[in-house]
Length: 364
Image (cartoon, rainbow, N blue to C red; front, side, top):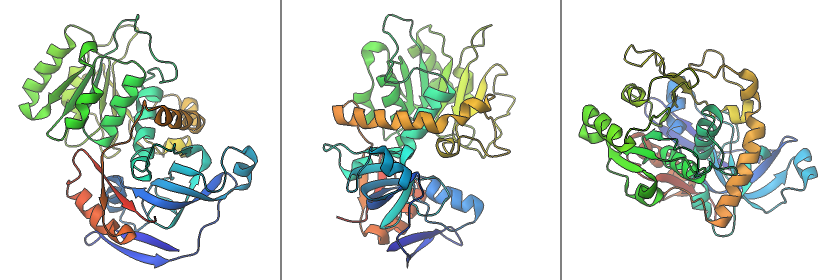
């Protein structure tokens, strides 16, 4: 089979090599890749570590072979249409004709969802789900918050990207409102997601930090806000977001989630009462943070159960797709199949994917 290896230096380049079709472990499946998705980490992590790898982690395709334990569950069958989150920085990723994924981070693609749409979902919805529903403890979509309870405001910075958009979708499914979505020019797809009747609002960060903070206060309309998600986590974006949260009380600690492990988040401008939490989505596979990672949750035992939680969550994701309460992210297909991966990642690195995701059609 053909597989793409991504090389980060001296400039990003790729090579297509022929390798054997991989074999699944007992709890894995081999998937014939129809469409592979892409994420910033596909080039960023390789550059930071200076390693070369088939770095794709979003898989959409058909099951080719099941591991022994997976076959015994009778949950999946050969030929099933599935999407999956491949373990980051490991072999047999999505940029290939066949890829491997653990069965607990795979879900069936309903008939009404295309492979292209499905390929935009796994990694980012896992990140959004772990962030809001695990680390911040907000209610899951299968047990949404009652409308009779007081409002629970949520600030999402970087809302127009795939991660921010899926965070909005999950918050809405869990009846978390008002959502204060902060984005830039590529945010037209957000308006149908937000419910103005429940106080949701879209704010343009380009108005400047001071005006952005003023507009957030205005949209909160006196409500205390203890939940925020910085889906960008770059160049100090978390600092003004942290300052938008309400002060801690005896029973409530304001929580700010971030998604980059490259920062310390210890600036003096961050209020001392705000607890910053780093979401490492790799816990969906490992159930643990890596040694030395910043701003980890205090309860390691809780993190250990992330894989079990993701198993349940991904099955509910499939249900929401099937009943139309969840959709994927806008996408653009890059020409060339596997031969287009290099160009697609270069465009991704250049920041050209604004409000959509690049995907690669590997097979028909």
